[in-house]
Image (tube, rainbow, N blue to C red; front, side, top):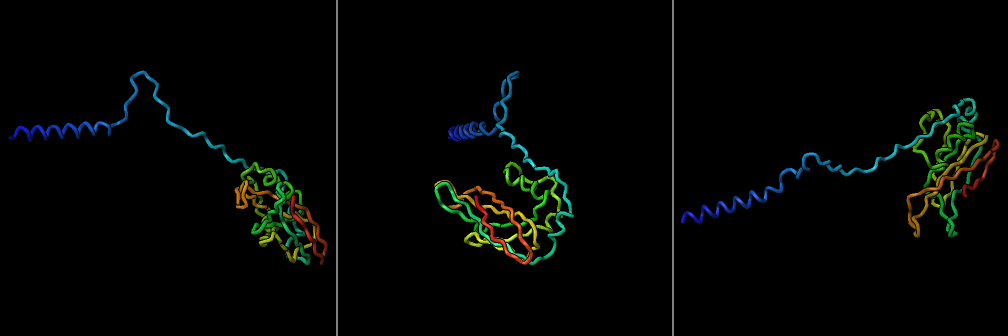
Length: 190
């Protein structure tokens, strides 16, 4: 009677060992054969950064420092090819002095080919004014110094064939000049 128990135990051990054979290292190619290459994803190209060639000139920006006595108001929107109007509702609207530095700084955003600016001058931030467009795309800047400015905003594009949000945005910009103690009305669109 002991014989069938030994045979049963040996059979179970053989089955266990056979099942574990698949858990070992993967089969290796025969000597002299080329090893298969591991699956690789194509490399991601590095993000390009724009390099500004125009130097930041503090004298160009000096007239725009501090508060002023002028106002700028307007609306930002885009008319789609199918006739629908999409506003810049909730988007940031930026007002910057119109200088050679600023005009070149617009290039990366205008082209959409750059991840940022490599040599951005931090002094620029002191002269940048920003607000948010309301739910209808209207915006307002108060107490700005008189002078020449560039208004910037972006309008979100709906997903193709829907009214819902998509992933793209259209960058808008418009020059505006405001006189002392006056108000300018601007429409940012394409």
